[in-house]
Length: 261
Ligand code: SAH
Image (cartoon, rainbow, N blue to C red):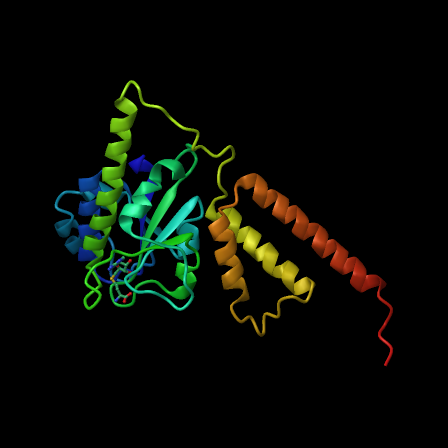
């Protein structure tokens, strides 16, 4: 199960921290590291040094230009944040996230991304809005920002503990498995981004949304759909509805008599 989880570091400035993260990951049995626009040089000897031998993870690290591309194949995107933001989003602590792991990975094609922000200013609002949920490590509120690798360590430790508990449960002969599996895989981020794009265009077509005065409409709709966790069939149905809505709006616009004054 741990192999289905990737760690995504956004805009990291210190290569040493990337090495520290690789070490924390390997300690906990994770292997996939993604770097989004690292600000320092990479590969770097400080990263290799701080990885204390987790070189394989650094060598296989994938580099992306933007977060959207790094999480495109993921069905659950969890953004780790040291502070609360303007628009409240579903918020879990690491143990609560770990408690959902078994259910989240019920399908073999499901993949999870844990996203971590910049050392100096964390994740932007746009990046946090690409996430289904946010994770906060409840530490001293007067001193709540952990070192990047320490934050990765805490989250991955909780995930490992949850996996060990699941394996123990499965090893018991009398183990009963209740039907927690969903019948259809959840939509991944790429599919959801296409849907949000289609939704925005449709809302413009029907004059519900004015991109010049966006307010928080798209962010709030994003939060609603992310909370609902649509599966692939549900997204297809929603997109079918949007297509017909656009067609109806276009037809309406074409047949409407010119406005008299
Ligand atoms: N100064 C930044 C904190 C950056 S720490 C800010 O105010 O946002 C670098 C990253 O480590 C954060 O973006 C976050 O992903 C993670 N992190 C640090 N402390 C955390 C905490 N208490 N809970 C969850 N994630 C945390």
